[in-house]
Image (tube, rainbow, N blue to C red; front, top):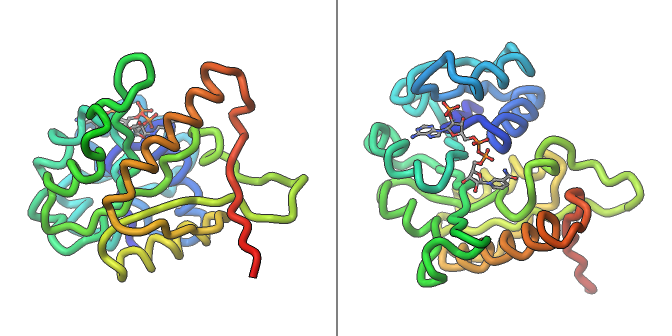
Length: 212
Ligand SMILES: NC(=O)c1ccc[n+]([C@@H]2O[C@H](COP(=O)([O-])OP(=O)(O)OC[C@H]3O[C@@H](n4cnc5c(N)ncnc54)[C@H](OP(=O)(O)O)[C@@H]3O)[C@@H](O)[C@H]2O)c1
């Protein structure tokens, strides 16, 4: 699969690396190929391709958005038409001052993203944990896969993203349509407060257990 990353920092960098090693063609959509995040991603994996944003998104089957939330509008403006009909994995979180929801809990960041690119299929995923778990999601003391909750409105796009989640070693848990993104964003804030404020382990993740 051709996968393009808009943003390759703490979140995008490890995900791009792992997906390339799984056999995908992974491209970094770089507004500045010399930027620190692009150079660090290349130092980690020289097989990542670097191209200009429009070209990178045009060539993609799936695009990951892993930019600071406040940069989303600028980052997406250049590639709106290239994203038409494509799956956009929204990895971003609207985090406000004091670890609050930056949109006042009234709407999710992913719904804002969807309005920026109305013809793309936005799926929220890879948001509910810190980057440490995208670097390494092995939890050897447990015989259960860590859960990755995701949501979005397009079922074909969700199948594709669910498969990528599975390839990356997570148990994909489809929690519903994009209206569920607000609740995933609150899960993020819960995790961030537990770990970054209250001192829980950054390698804390959730598992989904179902009794049949
Ligand atoms: N860090 C975490 O633990 C974590 C976990 C889950 C989700 N998230 C969410 O994931 C997103 C990325 O977080 P991060 O920690 O990976 O951030 P980061 O390390 O600061 O990386 C941000 C990336 O976005 C790029 N970028 C910034 N402004 C841009 C623009 N206007 N156009 C295109 N690219 C732009 C940066 O490129 P340059 O190097 O060129 O500036 C960099 O590659 C955020 O929304 C965050 O809330 C973070």
